[in-house]
Length: 180
Image (tube, rainbow, N blue to C red; front, side):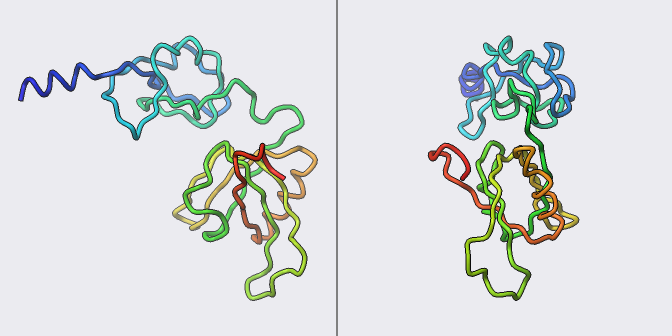
C-alpha cells in the first residue's frame, strides 16, 4: 500500500491555482496565483506552473475563486469588452439553445423566435452573431443566463429582442471562422 501511494505521489504535476479571489475583467497579479500539485487527470486541464509568468498581467474572463485550479479558458490578454464591443446578458429558456454545448468562446447566433403556439415564420428569422463570454443555469428562473459579446452597433437590438423572451441561440461551427 505504501508503494502505491509513493508511486502515485511521484506522478504529481505542478499547476497554477488561484490564491485570491479575482473579479472578472481584473488584471491578474503574481499575488493572485500560487502553485499547487495535483495528480494527472484527463478530466482536468490546469495551466502548468511553468507558465505563471505568462499568466501574470492577463485578465480574468470570469470570476476566479480562491483555491481553484486555473485553466486557459479563464484568462485572456484582451480587455472584454474591447473597443466597439458590448457584452449583452441573455435569459434563454430551456430548449432554446443546445444543451451542454454552448461554452465560453463559442460562436453563436441569436434568433428571434415566434410566440408559443404561433406558426413558424415563412422566412428565415433575423439573427445576430455573438461570442459567448459566460453561461450559467439559474435554478430560480429555470433559464440559462448567457453573456455574449457583440458589436456595439447591434447591442440595443439584442437587448430589445431579449426583453421579449422570444429568442433562441444556435451554436455555429468553430471551423468556419465565426458567426454569420
